[in-house]
Length: 142
Image (cartoon, rainbow, N blue to C red; front, side, top):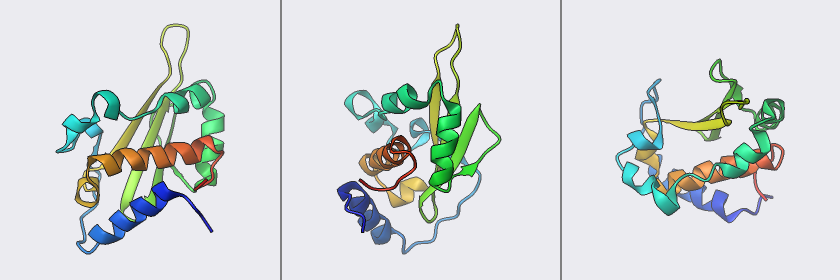
């Protein structure tokens, strides 16, 4: 049994809001495109530093962890995966390797419908949940 308070909170919010069926399309957006974009600045910015420290120079490690989480590989960036931590709530991680001139970068994208399920703090928590699972080698929960 998983005992992860973050996972439990996100599941409760998901089931609370899932009664409406939201169309999922190919409208992938960043947090800057969400109606609560202002939330993701300063102390509420997505915490992706640990992800970059671990996988910035190791896309193979990212691929291995992503596949253990049943991520769907995408033909984007140097390595990219679509995760479904909850049905109808895709989260996309795109990794670009660094080199001598550029630092590695990661982008996190969502289907625009995510804002129908989660307020900004829950979107941030969802990214933290997926990031933590990837850092744990592809395991959901603590």
